[in-house]
Structures are given as structure tokens and as C-alpha cells.
Length: 96
Image 1: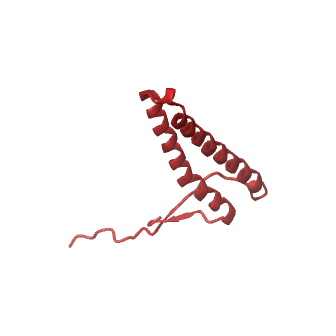
Image 2: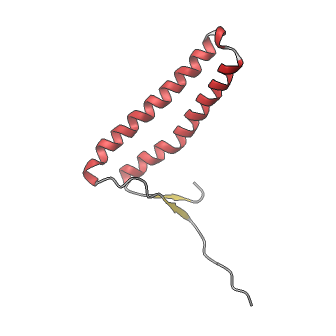
Image 3: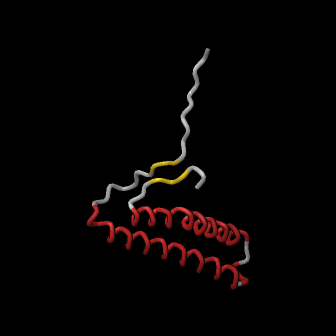
């Protein structure tokens, strides 16, 4: 009879950065600021490409898709990281 692994994974652990507790506020503000600058900058790129008809070329079409991808990726990962920094919970459920 062959034995198989019967373990079940229900969550992932995020080890992240080894930040000392007294520096959490500084790093939270730093990462939140970088997130806001990233999102606002990419949204500005999308808006400018959409409004200016001279930018309706293939290169700017791909640039707008890159900006949209960056906003999407940043909006998925960074808020979860910020929540984990504030709550000290370093796990993500498998369904999440």
C-alpha cells in the first residue's frame, strides 16, 4: 500500500520585511505615499492619452495598457500589504 501526502494548505504566510515595531508607522506612511503616487501617476497617463488625439498611436496604446496593468497590480498587492502591516497578521487565505 502506497502512502501519499494528506496535508491541506489553507493559507500562505507572508514573511515580508523585518521591520521593528517602532518603525511600522514610518514604513506604512512611506508605502502608502508610494502607492498613491503610483496610482495617480498612472491614472494621469491614462487620462492624457485618452484626451489628446495626437497620442492615439500604437506606442501610446501599449503605454496605456502598461499603465492600466500597473494600476491593477498595485491595487491588488499594496493595500493587502498595508493591512498586514497594521494588523500584524501575515497570512493570506488560500481562497484569497
